[in-house]
Structures are given as C-alpha cells and as structure tokens.
Image (cartoon, rainbow, N blue to C red):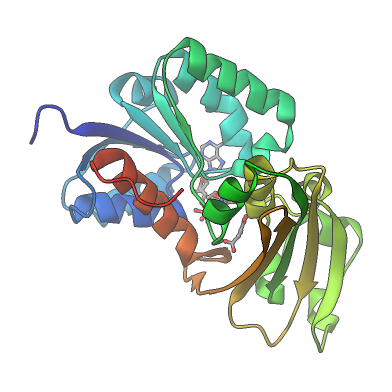
Length: 274
Ligand SMILES: NC(=O)C1=CN([C@@H]2O[C@H](COP(=O)(O)OP(=O)(O)OC[C@H]3O[C@@H](n4cnc5c(N)ncnc54)[C@H](O)[C@@H]3O)[C@@H](O)[C@H]2O)C=CC1
Ligand SMILES: O=C([O-])CC(=O)C(=O)O
C-alpha cells in the first residue's frame, strides 16, 4: 500500500455506495477504502461481504477521523447530519445527495467551513451530462436552464409529492407530466429522484431559476434526463437515457460511475473537462 494513498470513508452502503466500494476494491481508483458506515448494520455487512479488501465499519465520528475524504451517498439528511463535521475536521467531502443544497444557507455554511479548513467539497455530475458545458457557459450570461426527467412508476414510488397528492402511479397508461416547478420545489417533492436538478442549479443560475419537469412513463425502461441551456454562448441540449441500478430503480447507474470518475480526477494528475 502506498503511504500517501488517499484514505476514503464512505457513508451509505446502498446502490451507489456498493459500486464505489467495488471500484476501489478492483483498483479502478488509486485510493484506500478505510471505513464505511450505514444506519443499517445489515447493509454494512452485506457490502463488506462483497469486497476482497474489507474496510472497517466505524461510527461516523471515527470514520471522519480516519479518512482524508468522506463520501456521502446516503440521503440529504445524512449531508446535514455529518457534512459539517467532515469539513470542520479538515477532511474533503464528496456529496451525492446534492439535493441537501437546495438550502442555500447550508451550502454557504459548508463552503465557509471548507475555506476555513482548507478542504474541498466535491459534487459529482451524478446521473446527468452537461454540467461541464453549463459551468463554462455560466462564465457569461445564462438565460434559461431546464431539466425534464422521465422515470417509470417504479422509479418514482414513495416520493412525498406522489404520497401527498394520492397519485396512483399504476393508473398511467402513457407518458404524463406530474410536476413542473423550480429545482427548489422539485427536490422537496422528489428528494430521492431529482438531486441532479439541484446540481444544475449550483453549476448554473441557482436552484430557484432552474426549471424542472417530471414525467411518469409506464413504457420507460430508462431514467431519462433532458437538459437544455440557453445563454450568451448559444444553446445546448443533452439527453441521457440511464440504465437504472438493479438494487434501486430510482438511481441511475451513471450516478455511481460519476462518483468513481470524480475520485479518479482527484487521485490522478491529468484533469480533463471543465
Ligand atoms: N446526484 C445524483 O445524480 C444522484 C444522487 N442520488 C442520491 O444519492 C444517495 C444514495 O443513493 P442510493 O445509493 O441509490 O440510495 P440507497 O437507498 O440504495 O442507499 C442509501 C443508503 O444510505 C443509508 N442511509 C440513508 N440515510 C442515512 C443516514 N442519515 N445515516 C446513515 N446511513 C443512511 C441507507 O440505510 C441506505 O443503505 C441518495 O440520497 C440519492 O437520492 C441518487 C441518484 C443520483
Ligand atoms: O439517478 C437518477 O436518475 C437521478 C436521481 O435519482 C437523482 O438525481 O436523485
């Protein structure tokens, strides 16, 4: 083991966490997985069972102490529970549940803590493409950012918006618009489905100014995200047809891959893309 290899602690042993751990285990990333934590002990044990090089299962406090970089891939609640302690301990933080930052006050506190403690916050592109272009375009004026997300009923089940409005997802026979609003409102309505809208807001013109549409489509076999951006640079659109994770149909496979790609970017000398 290299002495200066990045030490990783991971919070959230679900669909994304398992993929990230497997990538480190298979040496796709030049890093050492030192510890994992999940509020479900069974999830931790199941994950460890799939790895050759087993990390320790530690409490969040011990995990933060041992790691150089803590990856949150659990929930927006977990970002609020552990994120600030990570940064105040001078450790880098990777956040997958970017929806937590729809609370711009929370993001500001995190940025101040990171600056004061000379550490970084990484938000991977997640299940979308286009963040690189949006970041470049945002150096000049942006007129409009919109994301249209289409998932099948299985991928939207249990979302607060669906439950609160008594929407029977099985009753739709064709593609139907369920929700239209800002990224702020979208993440409150679909906290586990539309983190990507908040990431777009942070990269572009803010979550209040980022427009979101959510469709349900019983025929959809992929999680589709279509992004359109207009501004001084011109316009671009991009569409990703994501393979859902087998363990969690709400979550696209690409989200885990983007976290792994971000780890590679941190660990490797070459930086490509915006
Ligand atoms: N940025 C993006 O593009 C995307 C972000 N996500 C978000 O990433 C996160 C992880 O996604 P998945 O792995 O698919 O979820 P998952 O449901 O498969 O796994 C999450 C795990 O975290 C654990 N957990 C949740 N809250 C916790 C807490 N407060 N403390 C400790 N453990 C906790 C759960 O027990 C579970 O084992 C979710 O918040 C999800 O909404 C998901 C897809 C795309
Ligand atoms: O994985 C996806 O397709 C997007 C997602 O759930 C999210 O952004 O929360």
